[in-house]
Image 1 (spheres, one colour):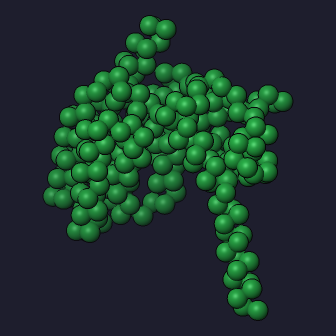
Image 2: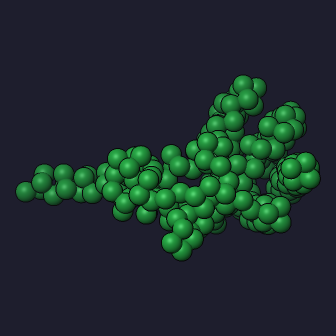
Image 3: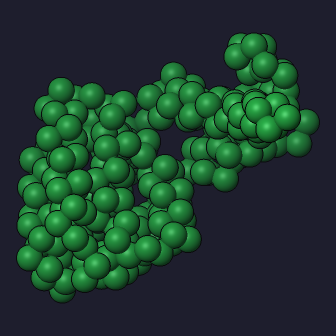
Length: 230
């Protein structure tokens, strides 16, 4: 009897994971440009493509809408968003406000294990830069930043800023594709980690502030240039 109940729970977890798997697949297709901004996603067509019913697709769409990647339109399906420069800069303002506070709260609680974890991510991230592996940049960038904030134990704030970073992801890729000057990002990450290891809170927070400000400003210029050329 106990085995039957356990099997039922496992099946339920597997069923619940289907919307997340579909959402992750669609998110990656949006971020890599396979699904273009302004395009319409229709539940029935997506369900047929993934070989599922409409219900998990509907749940996947809710996750994507929550992440700001699509917007539901009444009787018209869901449209892949094309946010304005102002919207993108608002996301960077949120990063600036929340991530600096997360880092400030995290550093005093950091153990050697936290530093080792963060340090272990950097070679993979820098290899993605060197290989121009755009599919990995955003994911690994957030993985590194999150490793510096996790000791804060501010679970809700981490969840909010993770959602912000998911929205920023496609623009981070665009910035790196257009700019292709990756040395600054790599240097910033190394310097930031060194300051965290020294537990120099104020210098680390200022380093992170400069890092986010620089990334946001470069992206703003790239987007405005791209808009003026189109």
